[in-house]
Image (cartoon, rainbow, N blue to C red; front, side, top):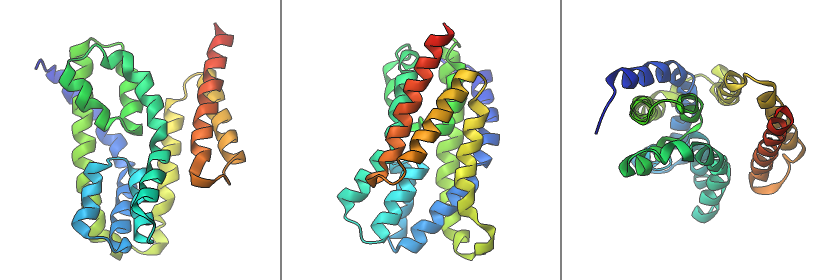
Length: 226
C-alpha cells in the first residue's frame, strides 16, 4: 500500500477540528445508551457497528422504549438513506482505488467525512486515499472513544447544558461550511422547505423527500448555470 504521509497528516489535521463539533453529539449518544436500559457493552458496540450518530441514537432510543428490533432498524435505515447520495457522489473517485479501499472506505462515509473528502476528489488516487484514511482514523477512533466517555459522564451532565441542541447545530454548521455557490444554496433551501412541509409523515420519510428534492433542485440549478 502506497501512503502519502503528508496527505495522511493533512487528513488528520483537517478532520480533528471538525470532529470537535461532534463531541456533544457523542455525549448524547453515550447518555442514551445508559438511559435505554440496554446492555452497556452492546449499546457501546453500536458505535462501531452502525457508525452513524443519528441512526445510532434513533435505534438505541427505540430499542430502549420497547420497539421491535425490526422497526428500530428500519427507522435507522431510513435516516441513513441520505448516505446513498454520498456514495453516488464519491463512486467515480472510489473506482480509481484498489479493491480493499473500495470495501473499507464506505464504512466511514459519514456526513463529516463526505464534507471533508469530496473537496479532495481532484487529487491523485494515492493522495486522496491517504487523506481519506487520515480523516477516517480521527472519526473512527474519536467516535468510539467519545461515546464511551458519554456513557461515563453523560448521566452527571446537568440538563441545563442542553447537549441535545448541539445535534442540529452540528449539522447546520456542516451544511453552511459546504455552501460556496448559489446552486448549493438553492439545493439546500429546496431540501429544507420540502423537509419542513412533510415533517409529519411517518417513519421520518421527510428526510428522504427532502434529500431527493435537494438533489433534483441542485441538478436543475447546475443545468441552468450551464
